[in-house]
Length: 70
Image (cartoon, rainbow, N blue to C red; front, top):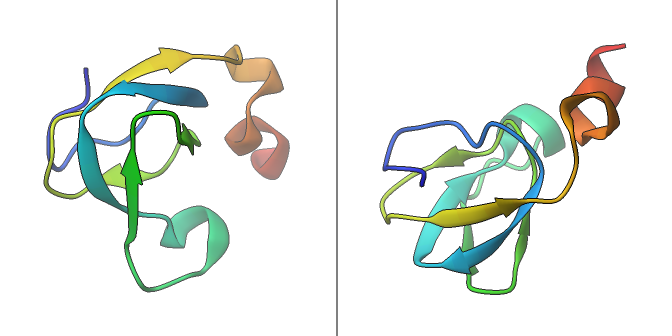
């Protein structure tokens, strides 16, 4: 479960909730993006306002953020 203001820890799929997320750290896009059930999220996105439940789909070593940082 990811609360408003928290960072998405690992890549996954939203299984409950709806929110705006800040993707700027990974994509450079300054406009928050709306996500809802069924959407993919990447580790490093910041949840802005809703409560999200995310099912992890990749371990850290295979995640997008790990690939960027290495």
